[in-house]
Image (cartoon, rainbow, N blue to C red; front, side):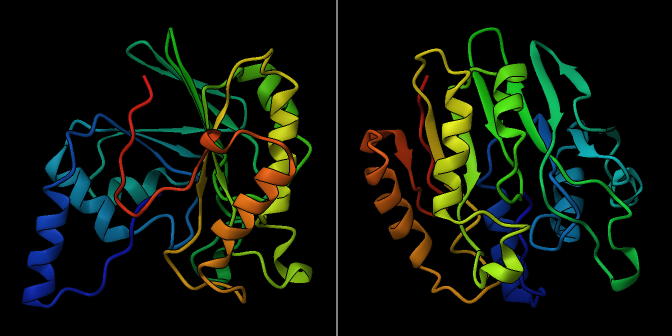
Length: 237
């Protein structure tokens, strides 16, 4: 989930420092996999330096990468393994994707999503993923959820990207799988993985427009879909 920054010049370095100091205090970071657009080395080092007590949670194989960049408290998890921080329970859950930062390191580390459950609320972060049959199982084992952060972008051409990235139609299907375990509980879907990096063939502004169309067509309430601006914060509890 890390944000990648441009190589620092004196001015850009000052801008980066200013942006980072606008972040609230950070207690924990969850990571989905090692691709550059999700795991930025400079961002990891900066967070670790500013908040040395941060608890880092990552899929198998990423511990050494994080520790080399200053992370101290690192927990690696396989799918379905759990961790606890205070009253928050975290579960590493399946995703359909791949990993590798170089040609020779493909799939040497794991990829995943995460569920976070407190005594009163629950959130599902799907990670970077294609549509897969485990969404229903995730809902049954770790739900019901109040919020699901689901990817909607970087999907064209489908013959190439369909096995690793969801499009809006897939996202709505994933919501239908999750709904089987909601027991009538409201689910807010927050759309992710669009509009930051130009990775694939579709226009960068297409995913949110297409997602809204699919959401309406499926009969979901408009205010249960959140397509947030960059840097936007919302409070629901």
